[in-house]
Image (cartoon, rainbow, N blue to C red; front, side):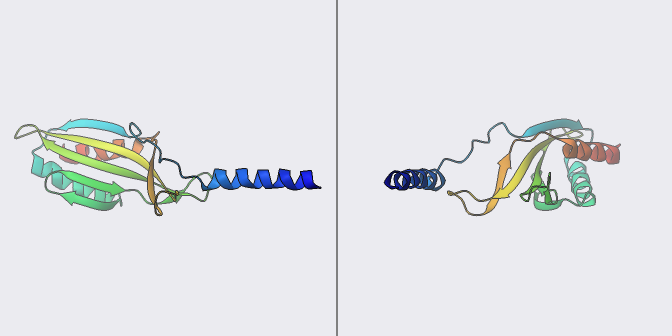
Length: 146
């Protein structure tokens, strides 16, 4: 009996120690997919067209500025019957190369909503496997500019 109680106490301590220990957040460097294209349009026209395309695709625009940066998010979804919410973050950067050409760079990052012992509830970056949304944005912008 005494032996069984000791085993239970040791197991309980091991479980509590394993669950209660803080650990460092994941290193997410290199998790994004970058897509880059050169547009045959002046910067202002490319900026207006990109803004219109992002709105038409019903992405949530979080940031947009005249320097050429857009941060947009896809709608939240639950994947594979798991209750954890997922979304995709799209960061579009426009850079004027010449008076008639603009470089568009799109960074795609998957995100999952959750809590760690070191953070408040928030969206956390995860490795991206699919850049179909970025390619769709590039195709729509190129089609409108042609």
